[in-house]
Length: 304
Image (cartoon, rainbow, N blue to C red; front, side, top):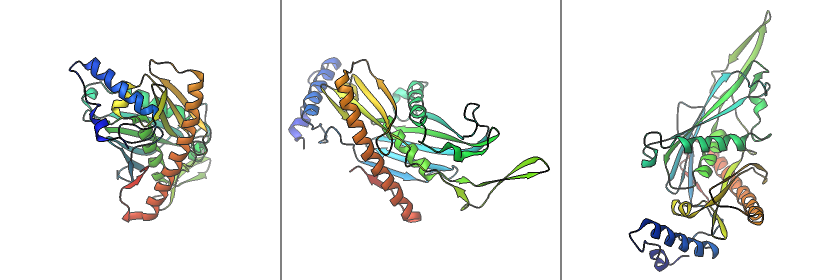
């Protein structure tokens, strides 16, 4: 564990913001290299995370995830629509991200639009991989009718590591998803759809192969997962990976002005796979436990 004396030494040593940043950066370099960060975590440790599902009543599925000071709400609406021309036998996923102005002053006005676009594009990338979600089960009539899942992500508070938290919230909301069962009938050449109004006659989505995003931030010669806001300020390069249940990488993106040499990338890929497998396993166990609790469920915590 990090001593109180060491934590105190991270305080700014001068009024100059650049000197303050350099001092913080130096402290984080040394602690990361010792596999001990200022909050006592190791380089591959997440902060404690809590999740709830079924939190928004007028959606087909919803979740709320809190990762330290990061707070994200996800709601999914299932609506009938037309399949994409190049995937005419599959349903569709549509991601929308909204950065609440209350999350941080930086989001006031149109300040959060760029970040919202980055998060939605990353989610599109990691889910655009065969097997992440069985989209064929969302198709009702090829080339004509399918279910479109509109996934709305609201950033309520920002405390670092938004991409990972958003991906966990999306996977939890997909687990909670309940779509009315549709019966297709033909009468004199006309196709009719009958949507069940029985709340128990529903279709669910298998999320076992759905990915979680693992962000690895390079600090000095080391890389850490679940960077705090202070650690993110000291990071010049980071690698974001979409990792499925068995370590399959479904998407990847490098961000930041710093460079990553090939050996560092290999190490980060290995770490990302290892951490991603553990994250997916812990998340699914927590979701299944919450499902067993039914109406008596409360907030489910994991990654202690």
